[in-house]
Structure formats: C-alpha cells, structure tokens
Image 1 (cartoon, rainbow, N blue to C red):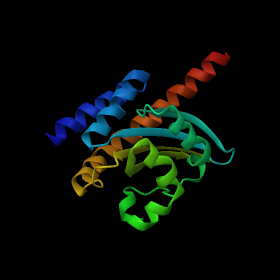
Image 2 (cartoon, rainbow, N blue to C red):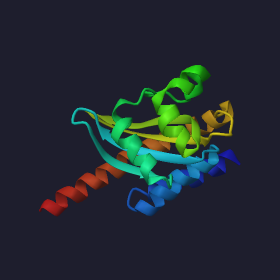
Image 3 (cartoon, rainbow, N blue to C red):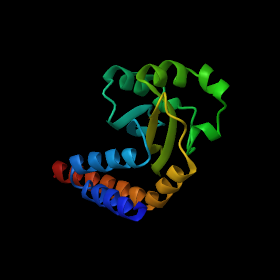
Image 4 (cartoon, rainbow, N blue to C red):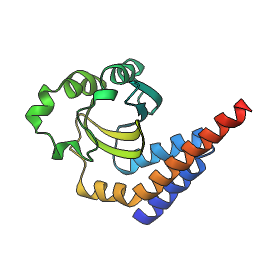
Length: 171
C-alpha cells in the first residue's frame, strides 16, 4: 500500500514539472497520505525578503496572507521535520506563529520539509494538522522520508523548467 501511494504521488509530482494542476494534485495527495488538513508550499528569497511562490490548499486567504507577510521569512520552525519534536506544548501555546496564525485557521501541528535551497532561495512545504488531531506519527514521518527523494528531484526539475521557460520568453 505505502509503495503504491508513493509511486502515485511521485508520478503526479513528476507530471507537475510541466503541469501546475498535477503539481497541486501531487502535493494534495501527499497531504492526504500523511493525514494533513492543509499544505502550504513556499519559495522564498531570504536575502531579498520576498515570497517568490506560494501554493496552498488552505481556503483562508487572509490567514495565508498573514503567514506570508509576517512569518514566512522568519519562521521559527526552520528546517525541522516535526514541530512537536522541537517545541513543547507550552512553547507552541505562547508562540505567535501557533497562537496568532495557525490556530485561527484551525491548525496546530506541522510537518515541514525542505525541497530545495539554492543560494538565498529556499523552497519548502508544510503539512498542517487540524487543531483537534494529534501530532504526526513516526509512520507518517517514514512515509514522507521515503517520498522525499522524488519530491526533491521533481521540485528541482520544476524549477529548471520554469527557468528555461522564462529565458525562452526573453528571446
């Protein structure tokens, strides 16, 4: 079952190199496979303080904008995988990110995965759990770790295709 799901999601993401809808569908399937409530993929340029790309399944546009404007470039979670392994419940209850951003959107625990880093550009995806769900399990972490080589490769290919497309448009 796990192998079939990994192959299906990887296939969608590789198709997503050329198709934005397939990329979204792949990330959405990944979210479902790890029991997420929402996903949010961001590409940020930390040197220039800019969000370059944002893809999310969250329907709370105001909440997403709030995160992008106030937390994306200074997210305290860093490159970690599962937040509950880094932060205590007390810390999470006092953190502006959790209390003022995620909680109002009905989310709490997160699984964060770095997709690529090139110079000052970082691309990562976060899968968030609904506030009434427990933290991500070791089995869900293992699933993500098995899928990550394909996700990272597809993310790099998607970026390269985008770069070639932009250069071709310039002539």
